[in-house]
Amino acid sequence: MTDLSDIGGSAVDAVMERVGRGVSRMQERKPLPYDLLESEDAYLVVFDAPGVEPSDVQVRFVDGEVQVRADRFRAFHEDFETRFPGRGLALSGRAKLPPDALVDAEGADATLTDNGTLEVRIPKDASGTEVPISADEAEAEDDPDDAGDA
Image (cartoon, rainbow, N blue to C red; front, top):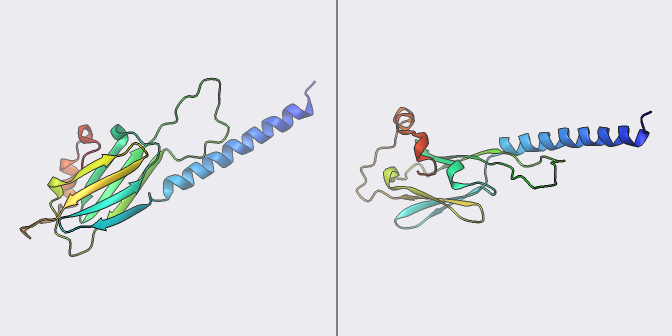
C-alpha cells in the first residue's frame, strides 16, 4: 500500500525539478551583465560570469562587438542530489563598442578572476588604421583550442 506522504513528496520533487529547469533556461537566455569602461589607450569590458572555468570561456571580437560564451558545470557534492537546478549552464553576452571605436582586436586579452569576473581588454589602435574583423574572417579565425583568448 502506498503512503500518501510518499505521493505528495514525489509530486513536490517533480514540480521543483520542472521549476528549477525553467529558471535555468530563463537565465541562459538572459545576457550576461557587463560594464564597458574606456581609458586613454583601451576599452575594458567586464562581464559577471560566476561558476565559469577559464577553459570553458570563448571570447570573440566581431564587427565592433565583444561576444562571450561560457559553459558551466555543476560540481558533484557527495551525499547530495540536485533538487532545484536553478543555475543556467550555458551563458552568453555581447558588448557593443562605440561606433567610432578604433581598436587592435589582435592585441586583446581576456582574464577570468577567481570570483567569476571576466575582463576583456581591447587596446585602442593608435594608428587609426584598424579595419573591423568581418564575421567571415572571425569564423575562419575561431579555433576551439584558443578558448579563453580574445
